[in-house]
Length: 125
Image 1 (cartoon, rainbow, N blue to C red):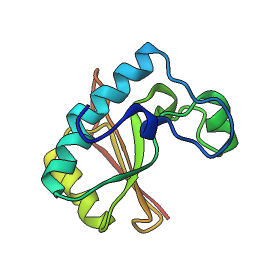
Image 2 (image 1 turned 90 degrees about the vertical axis):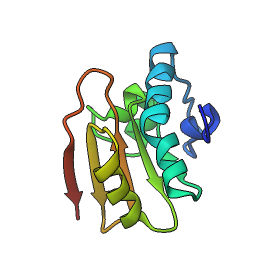
Image 3 (image 1 turned 30 degrees about the vertical axis):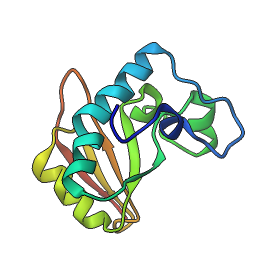
Image 4 (image 1 turned 90 degrees about the horizontal axis):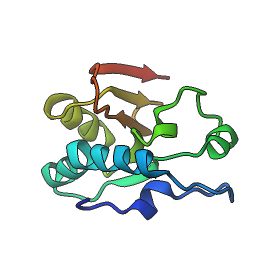
């Protein structure tokens, strides 16, 4: 995985265990290889992962949806120097399942599925 490590994709400040299994690691790798890594190269600037994989306990603690793609390692919440630009680069250049502008570009949620990417764009206000 270019530009990203499993450590930064699994970090949590909850104090709870957050260790992906092999399938979840595969999904994280696909997310990085198909979206996050190429996005970083296109942007030419660092991208910070606020949250990617979440164990069920971590997801519950942070108030994540019970069906969150973070649970399967298919999603990441990301930020950079210009989150609106980040959002538009993903929308216009990459395959994605969901792309969410959260709270007026406070962060961007992006997910990738190896089965079918819906290209669903949402806004949370």
